[in-house]
Length: 111
Length: 119
Image (cartoon, rainbow over all chains, first blue to last red):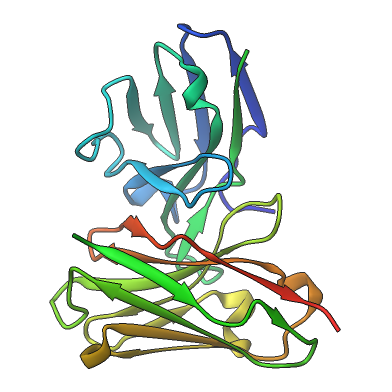
C-alpha cells in the first residue's frame, strides 16, 4: 500500500489528453514539492516533472504538472504511442513512516 | 555527464546479506547538497524508496526496513554501498541507485540490477 495514491491505469487515444492524479497528505504533498517519473517498459525511471510543474531539459511541453493542496496532477497532451509507460509521483514525507515516498504507479495505455 | 551504475550479485540465498554498490561519475558526493539514494522495484510492482546518504554523511532509511539496511559512501571512489541483511524471497526486485539533490527529486538513475532471492 503506497503512501501516495494513484489510479492503477488510464487510457486514451493518440492525440488526446490524459491526466494522472496523485493524492497524499499534509505530511507529504501538502508541504513539499512533487516530482513525476516515467518508466518505459524494461527501463529505469526517468525524471519527467520536478518542483510540481517544471520540466527538465529535453522533456516536451506536452507534459505538465500541477499541485493543489494535498494532490498533484500530471497532464499529457497530444498522446503518442511512445508515451505508453508507467508513471510515478514522488515527494518527501515528514511523517515517521518514511523519508521519501512514491505513488503506486499508473499504467498509461495509448489505444 | 552524470552516470550511475549498480553492481552486485544477481542471486542471493534466503537469510544471506546483500551488498550492492553504486558507482557514479559526473558529480561529487562531497559537494554540498548532493545525495545518493537506493530505490527498489519488485517485478510488476511499484517503486519503493530504501535509503539515502548525503554529502555530509547523514543517512536516512525506510522505516519499515531500517533494521536491515546500512548505507555508506566512499567519496574517493565515487561509490555508495547498500547492505541489506536477512534477505527473503519477497526482497526479489530490481534495485536502483539515483542521484538526488537537496531540493528533492531524483534527476539521474542507474539502469538497475535485478536481485533474485532463492535457495
